[in-house]
Structure formats: C-alpha cells, structure tokens
Image 1 (cartoon, rainbow, N blue to C red):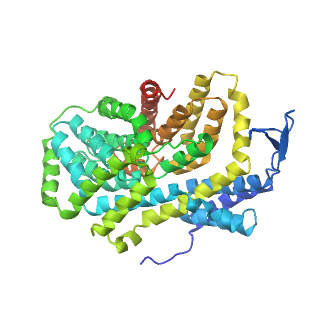
Image 2 (image 1 turned 60 degrees about the vertical axis):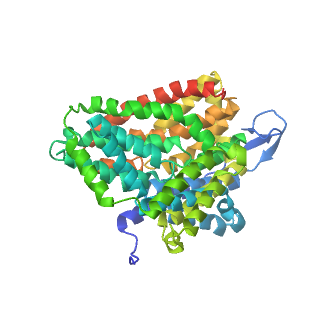
Image 3 (image 1 turned 90 degrees about the vertical axis):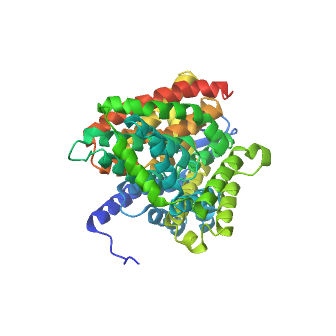
Length: 494
C-alpha cells in the first residue's frame, strides 16, 4: 500500500491559485436577470413579463465550479479529491444542502460509467483486448498502412467495451504500437521516420475517433447525453449515438492512415518484422481461455442489447449492469476485483460531482445567463451559421484545456442551450457537440491521457504534433460537419 505524503510545494502553489480564482469570483456581485414565463433567461432591463431571478446562489456555485475546472487543468490534486472538496465547500457554506450536493450520485449516468469501467477491467484482465489487437495486426499488418488500419480497427472494436480512452489507448494499444515501431527498427532517437512517428500519430488520433463513435467510447461522454436530456428532453442513447457516428467515423478511419503517412512522409518498406513480432506475442497468449470466450460472447450480447433498446425498453445503464452481473455469476470477475477497480470508483466520485454542479448551475439560472450573453452576438445569423460558429468555438477552445472531461463539463450544456434558442434541430445540435467533444483533442499533445502517452513516446516533436493536430482538425471538421451532416439528413435528423 502506498504511503500518504504531503502535497508538494508546486502542487500547493497550484491549489492556492485555484482557490484564489474561486474566491475572486465568489466575491464578485452576481449579475441581475429575469426568467420569462417560458423559462428563458433575459436581462433585467428587458420589458417582458417575468419574475425576478436571484443568481446569488448560482454565482457561488459557478465560482466553485470554475475553481474545480481550474484544478482539473492544473492538477494540484486528483479529480476525485477536487470534486469532494468542491461539494464539501458548498455544503459547509450552506450554499447547497447536503442532499443537493449528493443529488448527482443518484443519476443513472454515473452508474453507466461505473459499470462500463468494471466491464473494461475484465476486458483487460482476461487478455481479450490484447488478443483482439494483436490478431488484427497479424491479419492486416502486411504493409505500413495495414499496421495503421489494424490500430484503427482495434480502437473501433474495443471502443464498444472500454469506456476509458486512456485505458484503451494508453493501456492496451500504445504498448503494442511501440513494440511494432521497434520491430521496424524505428526508435525516438534513431529513425523515427521509419514508421514510429506514423504509428504513434495513428494510434492517438484513432483513439479519439473511437471515443467519438460510441457513448461508451470515453468516460465523460455520458455527460453529453445528460446535457442533451436536460436541454432538449431527448435521450441520445447508445444506439442513437453510434448510428449518427458510424458513417463519418468509418470514413475517418479509412482516410486517417494514408493522410498521416503523407503528412509524416513515411516511405514504403517491409513490415514483416512487425507482423512476426505480433505473431510471437499472439502465440505466447496461447489458446482462447474460458474467460476470454465469455468476454467475447458478453461483448456481442451487450452490443445487441444496446442497439435494440427501442425494442426491449432497457436503457444503456441497465444493460451495462446486466453485463457486470454476468461477469460475477460466471466467475469471470470477482467481487474483490470489482472493489480493486480504482478507475470505476474514481469515476463515480468525479462524474457524480460534476453532474451535481452542472445541475445546480442550470437550476439556479447560470446556464441560461451564460447562454443569453452569447446568443445576442450570434442570433442575427441563420441557424446553420450559428451552429457552425458554435462548433468552431467549441472545437478550438480545446487549446485552453488539458482534459476532455473539463472541456465537456465547462461548456457543453451552455452551448446546447444556445443551439436550442437558435432553433437548431435537436439531434443535429447534440450530435455536433457530442462528436466534437472528443475529436477536438486532436489539437494538442496535452489534450487527453492517451494523446499524452503516445506523444510521450518521443517519436514526434511538440511543434510537429501541434502542426499535424491542426491539419487533422480541418480533416475532422470537414468529414463530421460535411459527410456527417449529409448522413444525418438521410436519417431525418434535420
């Protein structure tokens, strides 16, 4: 067991800075406003029938929320610890009751995330995920492009079951990509152009496409689903999410490897060494074990149940917990293993806390105030222009964030309120925000866990990563707002 240690001086300085940010906001006067009879925020000067809205409580929640987001970015403490501190402060100051601070943990979104992490733990522990990835490398790795497509296919398959893109990309696929690069005699300080840089970039960006493709592709995706339900009253569930993403995601997966090979100017050469290395690793795993077979059958069953919820009526959270119960009943997972799954219980704390803060911001009028502050600037434009401007602002604001979760928590609900005010079709607005919430991490080498891990291998310099990231951002926006929009039109979403 690791021994506890005091907060280091640099971490302490960062924590004090976060506290000061929150304190300054807390002491500022709250804006004045009204709520119209239709529940829409408007400025206090508006001559419309309305009742006065006291934003004091909401402003104090906002101060704590922004301080928490700053702590997520500066990382003086783990996210779970920051969340507990924020909720405790709101309760101690009587800004919220203890019942209000705990309300987020009753949301089914939180328990979907927990169940998904538990299933992902079994995927990794049984070796099922590694077997799938290595098998794809052996099958597709007859060329450098084939190796890239193998990483894409592995992300596409494992994204259905492993909700942590860090666990999927950093824990399962990044080590495989590194071993493939070394089998090609490509090292960070020696011939990175012989395939290593290409594989690191494909692995990182394919991870983000898979994260965008599924509700279970990234841990914070359910926050978008929750916001869609709160703002539009629609359930952007597993099947709807995947249906809207499948065409632009597949196009992205198909184009990504050749695009990155051209960008990195990687020459064609023999990849048999990498393929043989994967074959040896696959042979070392031996034959399919009982637990791996159970995971394969369970994975197929979960996909069927998630995509047919319109027929049987079971939501994604219930389906996920059925999967956890199957793992326990078959002995594929033990209760001790469930208790040791740190990712699941850490996610429980911070996701529940973020939902509490987001709900309180909405209930106390802050989201409406923020949306109104922006909508006056964009309302003169047609709805399609408003959506495009919001999409660009949402996407490129990721430069200021070092974590997808913080970006989603800080911005998605407010942006959806603006799209609703602009009368943008609900499913299109939610789809744009949902998918761009993940794809925007392409911009920097510090945007998310797996990107940091792939970048940390040292095959691509920081300036080059930023340059490639900007080109990939144009690639994503073109495909998802172009081909994606046409696909959504075919689905009848607009």
